[in-house]
Length: 263
Length: 107
Image (tube, rainbow over all chains, first blue to last red; front, top):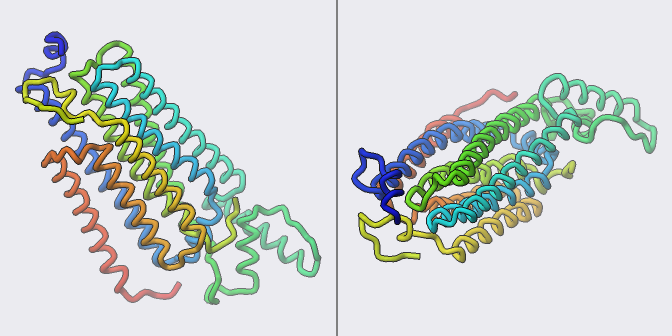
């Protein structure tokens, strides 16, 4: 280690670099604890409503786009690997590899957001959004279903989820077994948009931090002695990855195997 | 890679991850994600939620232990992580003990 870098990196209030790195990691861990508490409130609320309305949650979940969730899971897990490789590069003082791994992480994270944007775009196009869009599309599907009685081969213009819901509830009242409440389906969609939206914002923040790391590395401000700067950002990135590992099955697999998936 | 480390040494080499271990963790976590999706499509019924969350928990433990370096055994980090799990436990127990036992009006 060069004495110069040691002096530049070590803050005056720490005895040595190891103590400084441990303090930096601990500070990030304290922040991560608050993040876990924040998300766990959402997870608890989701658990309660899924327990109350399992059929509606399964129905809505089965109409989400599973292949995008699968691809995004792969992208995030791979980005966690490249982030860990970035720490190793920083520890070894390999600046070019550090920048390369950080950029790979950025591209994978941006890919996640790109697919997420495609998913939101498709959902909105299909009017699978709680509120006016949902109600009008369902009403349209119900009208088309009523008009098609006896007309073999009739194909409506309503979205597949609305047609499925209208068909399922045809001739049933809300107290009948098998009836799927449209209101509760919309409740699931609220959870879906809020949880994935907040998670997406976290990804966006992480991407900003990674770009900052790239800039710092390019400027030569991340010498070996300062590798914990990369590690601290990686802790945040891994937590965001970890939260997705729970979000994915809860939101996308709740209805897998129970209904014909829409996508 | 573990080498002899003293406090005054540059703390850059004493705990550098080996690429082999990192890739192995990657393959296991990715494989579990694929297994989770494939198992769900087979229709596990009531077992679906516990199986899915069980797989996700194993993935989370692997990520935390290896990639977030909890394996280093830093006691305050471990305490922080466990404290967050403890609060999550309280959230779930207090809420579900009410929700799962309370009489509800049929809606």
